[in-house]
Length: 80
Image 1 (tube, rainbow, N blue to C red):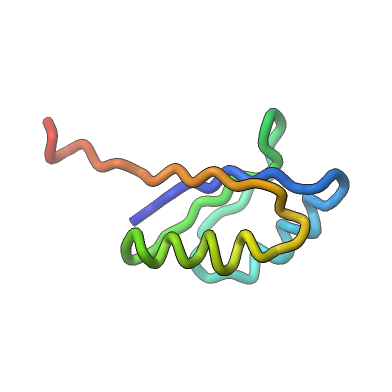
Image 2: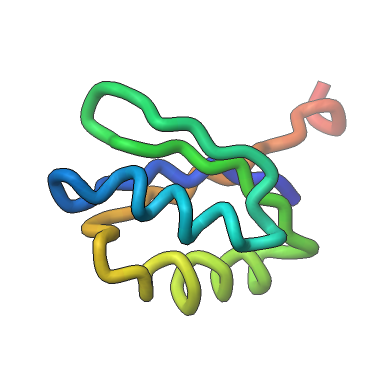
């Protein structure tokens, strides 16, 4: 499954967080963005449980991360 994780960092720590996140195999793309969030990460995991483990046990353990918002991708082909 794919998800986008919106990330708030401590002021001045965004590039430090990007360096840490880039070490994670589940993260396929990272972008520094402007607006209410500082970083958007594209994550691929085998299921919801794995995604939760990545976010809670790995991403949120990075000290300079203040807040995350997880946005799982929904596949609508089946509903059409």
